[in-house]
Length: 527
Ligand code: NOJ
Image (cartoon, rainbow, N blue to C red; front, side):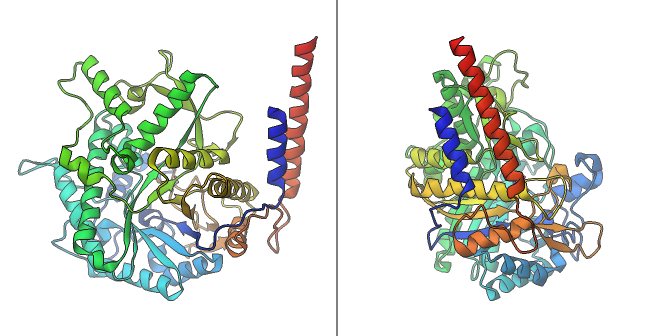
């Protein structure tokens, strides 16, 4: 039976598909300020945490590179918008650089040059019929070097400043920007920035730092959301939060593995969604119980996990107009055991779960995700079941390679298969997904991996000071999907050879492997 299902699904992926994207379904591409803009010290721009860490500690980034010049998008508005136009996207998701708009981090001083840059970008997009979709905080936040300032703890200082900054950009750009994202990926900002330390600012306070940061971000999100509705509602826009969701697939059919996979999704994804989307609000109960219990066992005088007041719980409930989902892949999960090496205390240890990438999955050039298109459908269904089918916009999805080759069949295959599962989630499961965003429009600075991991639909020549952009095959395939609103796995853009040769070989090999394994299974069973 399993074999039949597998063969049918292989066959279904070799053909054009029956479903079309709904007429009002929107397609976009995304970037973020530090990853593409460059111009790190242009005019009065302030220093942000990525400027700082890459300059004082270049080896923080694998290839010792930085975003000083990046794709130089700061100076290439017209060229970049033309690329978006050529791909045919409905919207462009980009982020604002806090330190470019507010060089000190505070609203006491607003940079005219920074504001002018974003005004020009927004106006150019609108003139070309492309909707601006704006992230207020990506990862290049303004640092507050003081830990205590007049006895005001840094998180509180940051919380206030973040909300002021959000309100300032609503005021500056909200006449034209109607789609706002407060924060991009709080888990990565917090766990990687304040617990594990592989993202700026690089703090390593496992089991504590990430939770405090996450708490601050959730509260800042709710306050920014409320500020929008109390002061700017006449602008008629909407405000959401973007969360990175890795799907947790149970390692086996056992109940224990199913529980572990569920705990993983609750504690890594639900952490930021439960307070907003669940009926009861607050953090996921499993998260509170496990961290409270382990904190007590570890002799902490109080739980390492912060608590919300009743008023804060109420302020977070429903505080998002859409759920932005960044999704790249799945993990296999099982309950952790004593042989799994984990830092204690840490978020991973608190989760009680061990997750990993299966060797059987096609790897990407990033060690943190593989090609598991079915995981997108699974996580969309999880959201639907857990939170009553809220509106979801896939705000990031894409594939990495180590080179910027324009013949990028593996990326083409990634987009075709993920979008196919997305269609199935919409039509067969009735998941409320209204938009999709490819990460990224062009190869760019991939944080701690520098320029070694490339996600672009366009390649960028980083040796050329003009940063020449060249369309990859995947950009034409994406354009064709947007135009036809269908996935055609046989589509080959002009000037390119078909990817079928590769796909056909892969299919023949997998069919052969399946026959061999079925044969062996048969022999083992009957003889
Ligand atoms: C997450 C982030 O939002 C983005 O900045 C990053 O480059 C991509 N996903 C890929 O890692």
